[in-house]
Amino acid sequence: MCPESECGLYDRLMIPFCLCVRGHAYVCHQRGEELKGHNVPPSPWRERPLEESLLLFDRMRKGMFAEGEVTLRMKMVMEDGKMDPVAYRIKYTPHHRTGDTWCIYPTYDYTHCLCDSIENITHSLCTKEFQSRRSSYFWLCNALDLYCPVQWEYGRLNLTYTVVSKRKIIKLVETGIVRDWDDPRLFTLTALRRRGFPSQAINNFCARVGVTVAQTTMEPHLLEACVREVLNDTTPRAMAILEPLKVTITNLPTNKEVRVPDFPANEAKGSHVVPFSKTIFIEQSDFREVMEKGYKRLTSDQPVGLRHAGYVISVQRVIKDGCGKVCELEVSCASSDSVEKPKAFIHWVSDPLRCEVRLYERLFLHKNPEDPAEVPAGFLSDINPNSLTVIESALVDRSVGKAKVFDKFQFERVGYFSLDPDSTSEKLVFNRTVTLKEDPGKM
Image 1 (cartoon, rainbow, N blue to C red):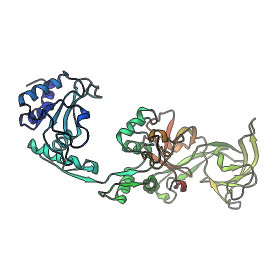
Image 2: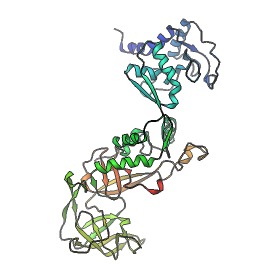
Image 3: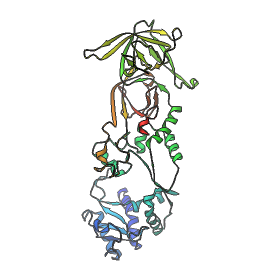
């Protein structure tokens, strides 16, 4: 038996050698710029002797030519009229897996059908721009007497306010605009997973859109609506404070524990316990020192209820820092059964965990960042500077302390969140998946 390295070499080169031997391929010296466009003249090397092509292809493999100097081309006419697509070209760029082992690499036209055939794919589903490649797909399998799957084309689904082209996403990564392919501001599958989009929601969205041969452009809020539907039924509730304001309850009889339902609409699905002490934290936006028309939450003259706690609090004293900013409230509490029902109930945390929260908005400012009419300077000039907001010191109740990466929660009155892989045992990191309601400005 031959060594493994020789077997691998034989397996990789057997098919292109077989193409040459059958007279279906040849080595060509035409440059890339000569092959662009339509009505490209036939290669002067199209009928070169078999032995010569085999010898030159072996020299390609051994790195005896410069990049772009020679290619291996297949003898066939594609559906769009182009002749002899390239099967192998020379690239002296190290591969992320094999390093410098190889300097010849196959093209899409060559590998697509062969991989599908080897893996026993029944139907290869492609977007419409690959329809012209169908002829090479069938031709190559038939030329090598291989099982040939069926290729079906459908209209590409595009989303506004983003790009889905691999080349454009690479540009975003290389320029540092996004962290990687799984940056939650992108719409790659890994990015959607990291942001917290459930697979069921993506499937529901695709089912509603349907499959068509026409190119379709959809608004992201339609996908987000499907996400909310799934998460509303599947994510347990927790309480988190993004911009904390300290509140001291001066007359709380004793520290206690409060049982909070995981799903308030169906308490039979479980609950969790959180501490409730004289020191709690509420959102800064849930307090106004001066009463405003229509404001229903806590003010100096207006009490507010605490969700799940069974208490209503009233402000006794407002404490400010040296800059005049409110930094703490001293309040008194009364049982919700003993006082008039307040106009609103707010969420809170007590003895919380400190965490990082990442809030995401659209990556681009314009609806169609690839359209020169909308963005003349190109998509890279259209980045939304506020697409990511990081809150380093948010607070969350201790019920999420044992969450695993990608676990999802609804933070009451705030939004849906997913635990990010950057989380550590010392600090949890949450990505906002979607808000609780659609922002009318996004529609």
